[in-house]
Image (cartoon, rainbow, N blue to C red):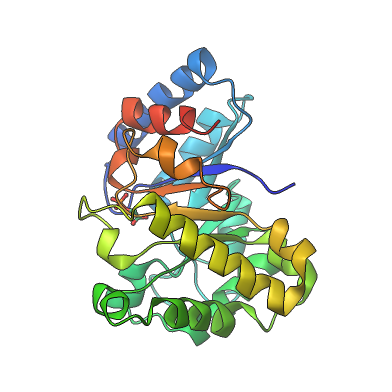
Length: 254
Ligand code: PGA
C-alpha cells in the first residue's frame, strides 16, 4: 500500500526562531488533533534542520525534509549541502526538482537524475517535483512534458527504486498563484502519471508509488483534491507557514 503524505515546503521563509515556534505549534496540534496515519513532512531551509530534528524526535509523528541537495558526495563545492550531511542530522526526505530550482537555478532533468541517485544511495526519500508551465498546458503539451520530466530523471532506475521515491505533480501555473488545478485536472494528470509508471515498470510498482499534488493547495480545497483516487497527498507551500492551515490540510487526508 502506498503512503499518504502531506509535506510542507517552507521555501526561503521563517528565521531560526520563527521556525522553532511554528514546529512547536504543529507538534502540539498533531498530538491533540490528528488521528490519521498520514505521513507529515516538514521541509524548512537547511539551517533549521538540526534543531527541528531534536524538537520532533520524541514520537511526534513528524518527519523532516530538506529542499535540495547537491549532486556530488563531498568536496570543493562552496555553498552546497550533501545528501550525507542531511542524513547525518536526521533528515529523511529531500525535495528535488522543484520548479523554482528548475527556473532560477537551471536544474535540468539530467542533473536531477544525479541528485535522485545520490539521495537514494544515502537512504533519503526524494520528493521529486515536476509539472508543466501554463503555455505548455494551453498548447496541450502538458502530458508530454510531464512524462519527459519523469523519464529523463527517473527511468534509469530499476523497478525497486521507484516506490522509494515520492512523486509530486506541481503545475507551475498553480504554484503560489492562488489558482489551484481543478480536482478533475489533478486526477487526470495523476492517473496519467500512474499509467506512465505502469508502462515502464508494471502495475505493482505504479500502485505502490505515492503521487502528491502541489500548487495553491489550502485548507479549503485539500479535502476534495485528496479524495481523488490517484492523489496521495499534497506538497504545500504558502499554507504550510501557518500551523492552523497546515494542520487542517493534514486533517483533510481521510
Ligand atoms: P504553494 O507552493 O502551495 O504556495 O502554491 C507549492 C509548492 O511550491 O510546493
